[in-house]
Amino acid sequence: MRIQQSIEQKLGERFEGGHLTVENESHMHSVPPNSETHFKVTLISSQFEGQSKVRRHQAIYQVLAEEMQGGVHALALHLYTPAEWQASGGQVPASPNCMGGSKREQAS
Image 1 (cartoon, one colour):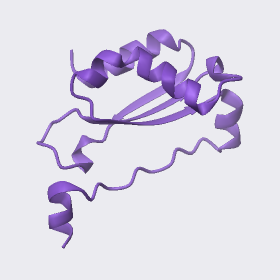
Image 2: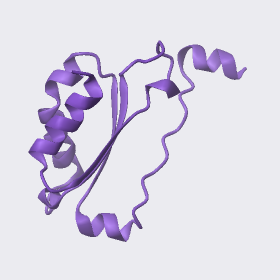
Image 3: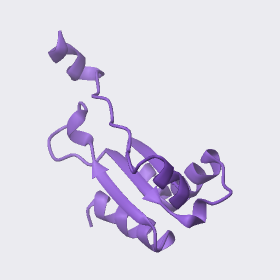
């Protein structure tokens, strides 16, 4: 199973009934083509009610412990309650382009 599919499956099972998108953003970083190392997760779940951002992130990292040890380098987490998602207008912040490693050299 590919890493993105594993992330989608595990989070979908753990946070049933919520909206979930998992985007592979590895292409924006200095990694080989077709890598699965950098992901952006947007998850809207009523299970986040009353939880701090730290607790929400800890819950995600607990579910994805195997993926984090097995090659995932970065997760951009955008975790909302349904009310927070509505208040945000349903907008997820854009991810910045990576400027590290060989990407920095290309920009010069």
